[in-house]
Length: 261
Image (cartoon, rainbow, N blue to C red; front, side, top):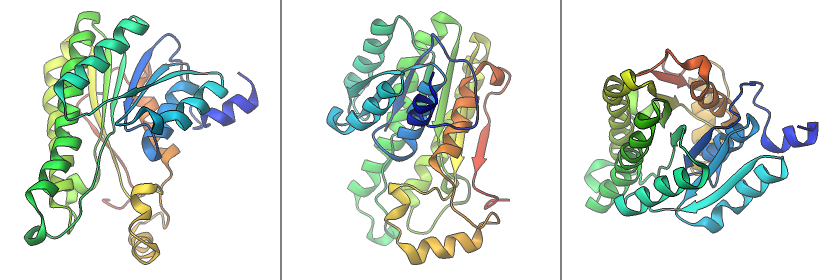
């Protein structure tokens, strides 16, 4: 791969061999999901980029293809069993197998609990947690038959320590951690690993909405004194997807610059 192609796919400073492997990344249209999809592609994986609208995935897919990788966009409502199973089975049929699943799709509906509506709660839990459940269930069937697989759930430090105004989001991410630990015990014997990555404050579209004042205060609380980058989170995902992580399962890798200590 040329130097320009490496830059286009995002150099994570980490190089593993994922050639011949097939990956699904949900929420791949921007931010962390886009960095993860590009990082996996750079290591040789074919990447199915998933979001609600295939149009929103165009930039991610174009960047991967321009860099010499292989990717395709798949529109999916992660809250719908039918939609999820159609995507998972479609990817496995198209590329012959499914090796890696990254459950990254997520939303926020932040507000204090007395003001939180039923819809605020349901939208976040159904997208962030139910979506990961549906994708994991569908993907695990293929992985168990193949006796190989990597499932990586993108949690959050909010699921570990909580956060005011995010009872719905924190609950969904704590649920992802519970799903990770339980499912890892079920599938370890089939050589399928399940791990979670819990980012802290990462420079992305999701954190930009917090505004500069909040972000500057956050930096003061972080021992590293800065926000993380999507590429730093993506590097952890690539490692957990690799053969080097074959004896790691049921774990939560926190990527927060020391915030949770």
